Length: 74
Image (cartoon, rainbow, N blue to C red; front, side, top):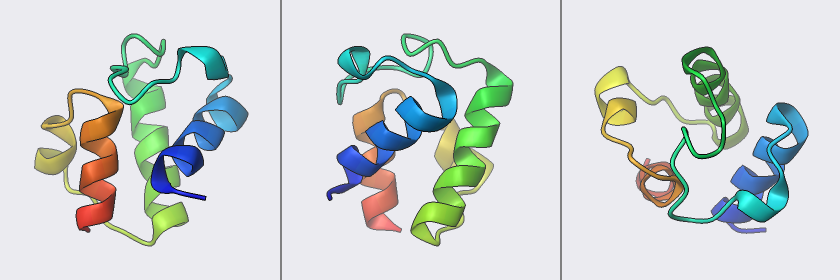
């Protein structure tokens, strides 16, 4: 399972985002995630991938593809 698949599964299972709207160019807003859910997502990602994402790195993310690149870089 690649990073996008893991991220998609997390969004579907933990945040009830419809799978069909999850695309690499989807923004957090287009997925219906509010600021609290985005923070929760960050926590799940840190646990799932064994990474630490600081606020500056996370603030620079515009879409899921940016997030995937960050995860793979860390």
